[in-house]
Length: 118
Ligand code: 5GP
Image (cartoon, rainbow, N blue to C red; front, side, top):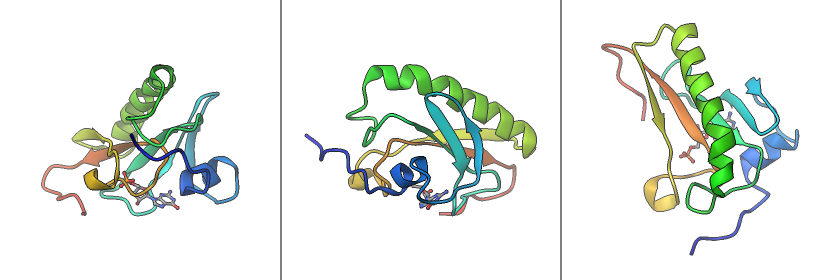
């Protein structure tokens, strides 16, 4: 199994309004904001408002609400930042590189000839 959801994580605190963020989208179930350490210009994070640690413990209905927001943000970010393409990536558990333990999708613009920052 995986550890239980911990409400002290940064995105949970952002959702509660305890920490600031540069929000770019919100609906009843989802929220999107700019990544603090962007891998490229326009790097955005899309999260569900429902508490899930990551993809491994999330309820399927969470994705039903979240993925339309991910698509919306991917399209808007591509247009707004004139990206050549968009990567959508997502990490689960520390072994895979997850550092914030609230489910999130990275929406990362890719630009021809520009390397992504680590
Ligand atoms: P992970 O490796 O867990 O998939 O990615 C976590 C992401 O959250 C990283 O890209 C990191 O830059 C971003 N991040 C960490 N802390 C904050 C924060 O306080 N605000 C925002 N907007 N992004 C954060």
